[in-house]
Length: 185
Image (cartoon, rainbow, N blue to C red; front, side, top):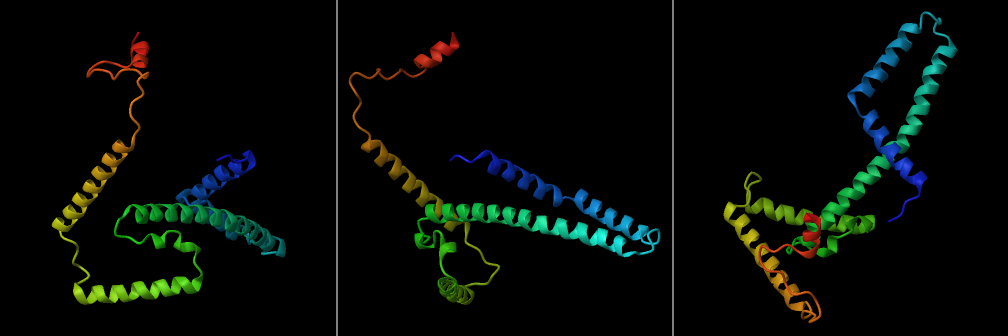
């Protein structure tokens, strides 16, 4: 995926600026600025210019921060959606229909929310909130996943084409490949 240099620059700048402005140092710097502004009030006789300085400064900073925060939230949201999609995709018991659920309309999301709300109500009648799955259940699920992995690996191994007779002969155990031998020399 190719990104132009100005977009790449903005990406780096936005990430660094969001990180920096979310730090304790940035908060203390903003607090110090406000304290200096308040202390300087009597020096400038609380003039309109004195008020305009802080109003203009905070407005500009707020305006720019809205875009930086939105950029950061968009990126975080996309990353979270990708992670959730991965979890749904690899879980045999999860519905793949929920992949990219964020693209549904609000009405469709409300219908899904209502459906899962009914499931939650059923779960409340079956067990207490402090109960969790047993270790045995977790082990059974793990064993199922291992079995599925073994079946897939076996199927991939069977699907591989037969070895090409002109290809190199398989190496013996403990023998380095030709490229490893060249590197060792």
